[in-house]
Image (cartoon, rainbow, N blue to C red):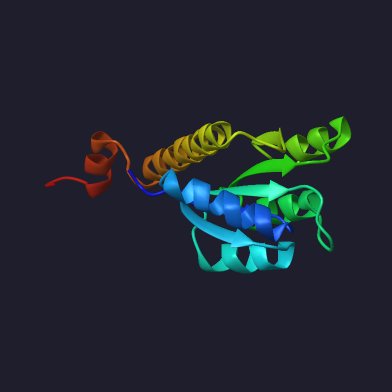
Length: 152
């Protein structure tokens, strides 16, 4: 199985450092960013599978970053994580494409399970895309023979 590439995006450096270490022990390949701009830069250079994203950050907040991620990297699964959750921000995050919305503090086992679920969702979507592409490119044997004409 492919290593899950996970990026943590949070302006709280201590949280990112500690959580990164804990998640790395769970077998994830960890990337981290302390701002939205840093996160977008990392996404451009790496095939990140799942992003765990803080809602409240200075500059580009989590909702704005979520929308930017979904616009430019639509297969990336995003889990919103906040210490200041509101019903409104949860609804907006989920409507904007987040696969989950969690509140701090979060149990590392719960976060690990949610990341694995998000990765599996992405994997299933990638498989559907591959099948659709394959169906467009490969015709049935009968259609191939008919197109080749007599003497095939």
